[in-house]
Length: 242
Image (tube, rainbow, N blue to C red; front, side, top):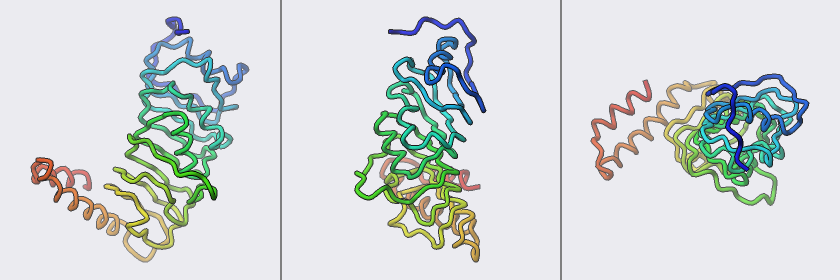
């Protein structure tokens, strides 16, 4: 049934940290009844427990950012229950820092199971493995996803099964001992490798600049095909990298 019109505050941002609820998994539904439906940013960190009762929960039609970071007990098994299907139709940013995630592909499976389509996904500060469990089926990432943060996750190699194309991929401050090969990386416009061991003897800014400038040249060469001025494109790329 549709929710009754809330009489509480018309908040656009709500951040909850280090909290617990007597209502158990129904806490978010109870809170929702007291808020007007224009909440855009919801952050629930260090929660006890981090669980939602999806059956009692109404949709958050305006919510664009959901932050469930610093909930190490969440994990990939608990993620589908936290991403209640069809409750976050406008979600653009999903932050899962230090939230018990194990593999990018496991997170992908949770997104697919809940039909959540974020544009920006932050998995930093999780202890990630590069590959899914043997026998796990391949996963199709959300088509809207353009930015993936895998920084500070202890990765020793580029994970398999990443999205085929990204605008931004952050692999900084990991344990990569060699420069990733092009066939190990998705098609990416902005790549960050700062803080990895293989860069200790080199200049990380120079390497990233070389990679990103090569991507820029590729894109500029394609621009006449889609009818965009090369001069405008070059100006845009220069602004992005300065």
